[in-house]
Image (cartoon, rainbow, N blue to C red):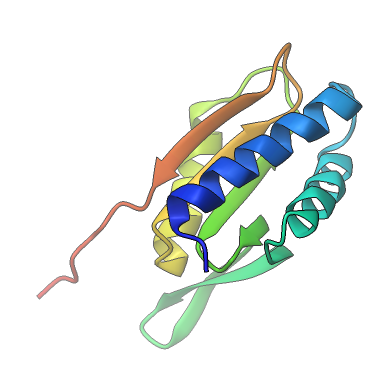
Length: 128
């Protein structure tokens, strides 16, 4: 299995290739499908619309879907907007926190150029 840094580099290469071929102007779902094709062509396991549940004790209090989970180690959240907003970053960090996955990439295909931000899970120790 590849290490996380190799996975991240491969995701970035694949996203760059998708952007070169498709440019800006499409819906997020188009980029999601194209990026998934590229990731799988590189031998990475990519799960789309990965379900995330947030628990309060034993009760599910929130449900979300991550755009792509790569190798069960990196969450990729895609956008197709002119400019990223801090709430997009917060969305990815909340997914990382809920899944206990340490690494994530926020990739925006909608701006003048491809924009990629790496985010990390924020550790919150349990209350005692």
